[in-house]
Image (cartoon, rainbow, N blue to C red; front, side, top):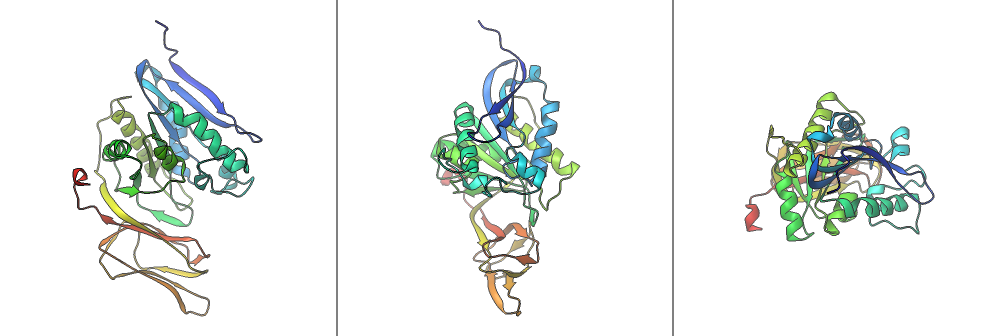
Amino acid sequence: MQQRKVGKYPFSIDVEGAKPIEAVLVVGKTEGKTLVVTAGVHGDEYVAIQAVRELLNELQPQKLRGQIILVPIINKEGFYEGTYLVPDDGENLNRCFPGSKKKSVTWRMAHALERSLYPKADFLLDLHGGSPYETMTPLVFFPVGAGKKVQELTRNAAQKLSLSYMVQSYAKDGLYSWAAQCGVPAVLIERGGGGTWSRVETEACKENIYQIMSFLDIIPYNKQRQIPVEIQDAHYETAVSRGYWYYAKTSGTSFRTGELLGRLEGEDGCVQQEIYAPYNGVILYHTHSLGVTEGMPLMAYGKVCSKHPAEE
């Protein structure tokens, strides 16, 4: 029997016509599942990037079962320029899946990530955070509509995480959501925001990674400080025009049907947009910037799931 090469092995994900994406393979002592962890799809979401950077130093391969592929910072140029976009072409990588070899560099990055990571993953964890203009409650998105097996596995994984909400997602064009469409169980965790990072949020993010590792039987980890509340029927509101944004409810707060959640005013003070609650629910995240442009996210909210998962 061939002996396992236990250890940490840096490698590159080649992108045609662009710099490669750096990654590390951590091989554990015994056979087991493969977890892929990605961070820095958006270069200005710092908690996840710092968490994976620290985790790389903390992991001890001899104590692991299976293997972990860590991609600490996918959009490195965006990180250094402080933007969520890929500077080479101004594209949002998380809206470029499925990727393409025939389009611009960001689409080629997506193509390379799919080809390199999806076939190896038993589970994919994509780490994000709120944009510099957003305040966000810690949450995890898990895919629904990607098949019963993927939905059940990712829901079970999400229930093991210490964060506020687990949100049913129908997205298809992101790194994790396209992975789910391809049959790879995957979730997206959101932590931090506002263009900052903190020691508390970084530690909490690392804890979430350890919880997923434990779920996959890669390493024991039995701590869970809170159980997430499941959210369905999530709504994502965007600005109909540029103007002054006044939010009436903040991230993590509840509301009742008919309550005003926020309004957008033009420069003349006339109301351009009002958002009223269509049901009883909670705010998942909101934009805290006063000035917004057309199409800019304003807030996301959802309804607490009343059904037992087995009834869905």
